[in-house]
Length: 346
Image (cartoon, rainbow, N blue to C red):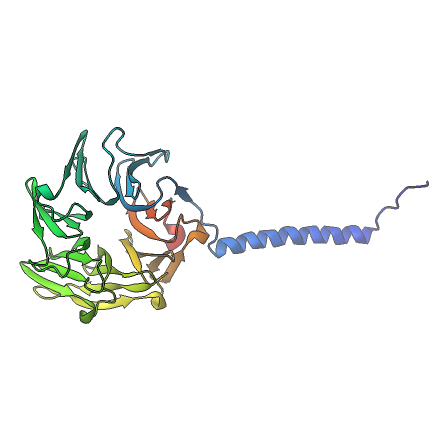
C-alpha cells in the first residue's frame, strides 16, 4: 500500500532492547555510586530559620538554638520553629552560649549580658551585677556547682546573684574568654580568642597553668573544649584556614601536657577546629570552619560536607538527641542527622 512503512527487522529491535537495558543499568550504577561516594546521605534534614547558629541546648522535645538572630525553639517531633523565643519577651542580642539546668532554667550568654529564663521569669545580669563585660560568650556549670561565664573582658564566677570577675590580674593569659571547660580533676579551662596574645589558661586548686604558641599550642585562637571519655582534654584552635585540634594529658597535681596535635594532614576536614563532640561509642567529631565535619572512628576519619546534605560546612555546635540522633548548628541553619551511624558506620 502506498505510504505504508515496513516493520523494523528483528535484529534492530534486539539492539534497541539492549540499549534500554544498558541505560537502566547505567542509571542504577550511577545512583549506587553516588550513595557510595556519600553524596546522598539518608536521614538528613536542614532546618531554616534559624540561620547562623552557634549554640544548642536540648530539653525533652524542645531544641533551643541561639545565634545572630537571637533565640528560637524547635519542636523536635514536628520541626516547627518558634522564633523569636520566648514569644512576647524582650528581644535578645546575638546569642553565643546556652546552658540548661535541671529545674527548667535556661541560661543565655548574649551580647547584652547573661540572661536567665526560669518559666516566665526573665532576668539579665550585666556589669552592674559584677560581670566584667556585658558581652557574654560562653557558659559552664562546674561539678562543684559554680556557674562560670566568659566575656570579652574576662571570666566571672557566680556567687548568689552576683559575679566575681577573674581577669589577667588573677592569672588569665588573656581577657577575651571565648570557651570554658572542666577537666576530670576539677580544673577550669579558659580559651581566649585573641591571637597572638590568646591561648589556654587552666585554674586548678588555686594554681594557674597557661599555654601559648611558645608552649606548643598550635594556634592562639581557642574555640572550644572537650573532656574526652579517656580523661584527656581536647581544645579546638584556629583562624580561617589555620589551626588544629590539640589533646592534653591531665597530670595529677601538676601542669597538663600537650600530647597530640591533629591537622588536615592527619585526616581533619580543615585546619581550624570550630567545634568538638564525642558520641556515646567514643568517636570524636571535629567541626571545621569551612570544610565540613571529620569523625574519627577506629577505621579512620570520615568527612561529611554540604555535598552530602549538610546545611553549611562550618559547624559551630553539636548536641545529641534521642537514640542516635545528632543536631548540628551551622553558619547557615541546623542540620539534623536522624542516625549518626550513616556517617560512622557503627
